[in-house]
Length: 447
Image (cartoon, rainbow, N blue to C red; front, side):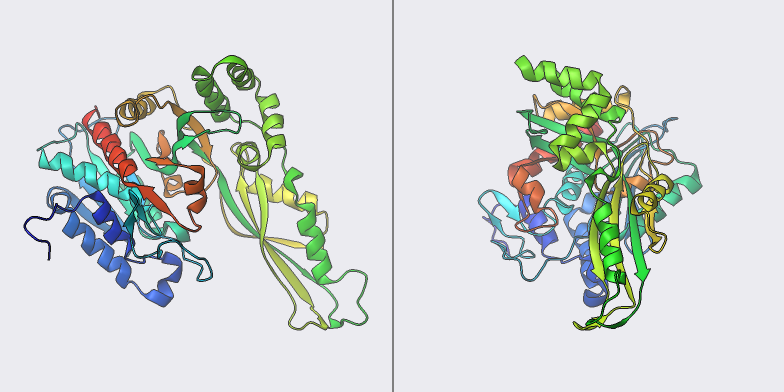
């Protein structure tokens, strides 16, 4: 029990308690729904004003939709703030400095799985709303808080919530979900900090390649076994499978970054921003994240075939994951893969696929509001558009909402970004406090 003289629990303590609940959606069959049920109950305990003042709807078993009525009904729709409370599994063989589900508070940070993805971004939304409610604040227009509990397993909750909006004819004026962050050196040749805001999202495509061949004893193999055929198909799907192409968002990104640069870097960024074909080739040559910004990526993630070391398998398969660049589609990507493999004996099956998003504008009031809130929470940090390479729950809104942005208002170093889905995930307490300030300002200045 907290003593009378103990300080009131802060945002770090509340996030710590959230992290201690292992809401691992991929392990639902093993762990059951109890961690998720306890998480929802914890939200009600930690944020009583949110639960008293806002209307809560449940969509599927894991979708939470809070509705905050504004002072007026806006003709151009409400604000939707999104986050998810499920997390990815922890590999038991990985060594964490602090236990992944202990929610340790140490060194000015909160440590554990979900600190950045995505309980940290979720908590700063709730903190802002709870604090504004304590001040008697009412937003100018309706606000929805959309929280999903299965984003890491393809987001059925977010699909149901988005469908409810469509069914009711509600078109959001602005949607904000996880994605970019406040980062150092956003590109290898660009120093300084920038708030990277995803104005578009690459599509996702999972393919299964499979082939059959002659089985039998490994002592007398045929010229081309099923395993060799699949290996050759995977090898043909190299980095150059898809041609690089710079979408408008990349040109906008370079132009915005040039404003804060000086000397040769400023000239380089301006030139690249004005010449998309050159940008595409330069980024492709850089490899890594820059290359992924301008082309569809292909990664073989699983392979199978065979039952014994000395037996030729009669069939083999590989799973390939693609992130489809803006301007392409699932259909065009599948056709390209088939052409590159160039082997009719290898079947290409679509396991799961969604097209990339359209680009949301950077010259309208919604993006300007993000920049205005950033000026308060992170002074001097520019709002810079970019293309989100991973998938988010926001993709279920971008089909019918004109302004969908992917941005978590937290500072993340390169090491922290690498810890997402990895080891030693953590978030600074000061970053959480600035994140709360961002959302509070956003809601206060909403028109």
